[in-house]
Length: 317
Image (cartoon, rainbow, N blue to C red):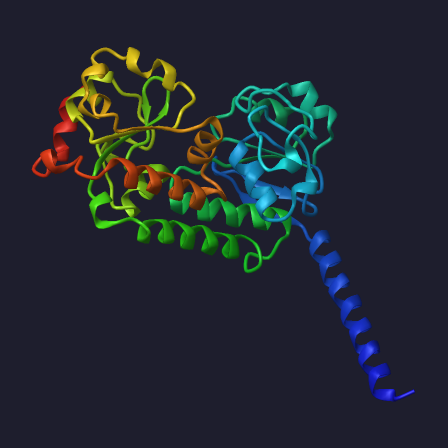
C-alpha cells in the first residue's frame, strides 16, 4: 500500500480526535456571565438542560444550533418546529408554573428581566439568567451572552448570526422604491395601545427602512399611549403587530383616521405578528415584512405631511 494515503488517514484521524477533545474541553469549562439584572451567574460547565421562558431566547438558542438542549418552554414559544408540540409548556413566561420548571431539573432557566419568577426560582436553587433585548444593540449583545453561556465560540455563533440578521435588514431597506420612504408610521405592538417607539428594535428597523416613527424615542421603547396621541399624530400608515387588531377600531375616534379611511393599514397574521415583535434571529424576515407593507401602502400617502413636525406628537396625552 502506498504509505502517503495511510499517513493522510492517520493525520485526519488525529485531527478528528483533537477536535473532539477541544469540543469536550469547551463543554467542561466553567461559565460566568452578567445578566440584565446586573447579576453574575456562574455555572461549572455550559448547561445541557435549559428551560427558556421567553420566545426570543428560545428562537436564539435554536438559531445557534442548540435546540436539543431545551427541555421546557413558555406557552408562547412556537418556533422553530423543533419546539412546537414537542416540549413541556410551562405557562406564562412572566409567571410560569414553578413546580413544573423545578421538576425538569434544568441547569439554567432563561427568562425576561421583567419576569416575576426569577427570585422564586433562585430561592429553590436554580440558576437563572434574565435577558430582555429591546434594541438592535441589545439583540447583538444578548446573542453574544447566549453564545457564551452555551460554550459556542462567538465567531461561529452569535457574531455569524448577527451578521446575517444585519445584512438581511439592510437588504430589505435596499429593496424599497424611493416612493416608499419617509412615510410616517404608527406601529402598535400590543393592545392598550402599546406602541413600538423609535427607541425600540422595531422602531430602529423602521428607521433603517426609511420610515418615520410618529412615537418619539423620548417616550421609551414600548410606551402605553392614550389613543388620542395617535389621532393627533395622524400617521400615514398603521402597522399592527399585535393579535388584537379586531378591536383596533374601537379606540375612540380612530375610525376617522386618514390611514383608516384610505385603508393604509397592514394587518399581520398571527405568525407574522410573532416574528415582528420578537427581538431575535428572525428580525431580518420581520424587516422584509415591514418593507412589503411600506411598498404596498406608502405610495402617495405622505405628501400631505411633508411639513408635519414630529414633535407635535408630544402634545398628545
